[in-house]
Image 1 (cartoon, helix red, strand yellow):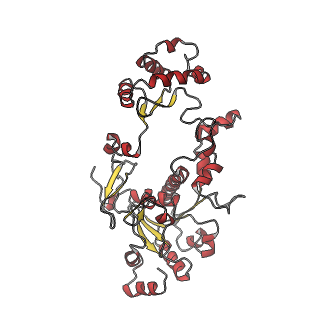
Image 2 (cartoon, rainbow, N blue to C red):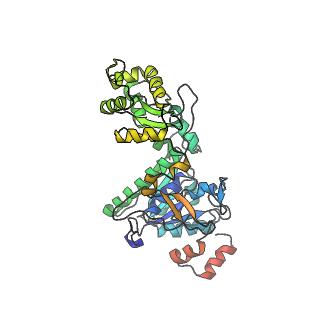
Image 3 (cartoon, rainbow, N blue to C red):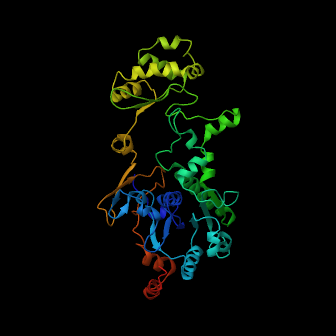
Length: 402
């Protein structure tokens, strides 16, 4: 698909002032940048975003962690401890559409950069605050990272092997989901602004986002009062629905209805399971999982994973290998869907990143800028956005404002 001109992208003309760091905020602003927004990433002079040091691995002096969520942005360094730096942010906020920050509650107010202060100079500003626990409540002032919020938010309680200890998900999914919620809220607010002419304040927290993502697990408890358990790769309400070992590597199988169960039994040569009263319905299979799962596991060990996948796909049985990163980014479907991107970078010859998951027919997402070096675009942004000349920019440097 040919990329649209920058002026035709979904969020063309939207300027985002990004004062966030780590993952949830930068992930949010990356999504906005992928869809065409101009994102100005404001960083601390010298050190920049905390994640720039979160490694190894590093490439071209940049951490892989930082690179994963900061494409399609330009970086400027501003010292917020300097009153002139605060004034600079106010100037940027006056000509921006969106501001995203993830400082602890109350800090932006001490700087005079809170929503109430900035809406007086820009009533159309959409201002999004991302915090651990939200802007109010008894935990308001507590700091928090993804791992902590996955524990407090119930995710860790349901993650891990049956009978084992709680574990965290392999990726900072609470941060990622919060970033997705924040980006959606911002876009909805921009749409509302078109009707009302006014911006608004958005309060997004990792805790709220995590609780909302408990989905059916939360519903199961709220409906029945029965405490949730850890199930490993198994499913609480569907059997068989899990990962099984094969002759070589593991396979995931989802037998989610009676039609699939029939095809599954016939394909693995176990038609007698169809008439076994212990397995004839899904509720019966759930009730007798301790009997059925070892029987299925024994069958699955008889063939290699790819052989099972080929047979199951023909029979329309949901399945797939448990991919490593190597096999994932060699997968023909992943490559076909352009989920592996390769772009030039100033210090990395060729930077490979996960691609853009949003596929829009008229305004597809585009990676037009690599993750920036710290402060890489300071002079350009001051000149293009605020109209500062070389002498004024040099003065800011001499005063260590930027």
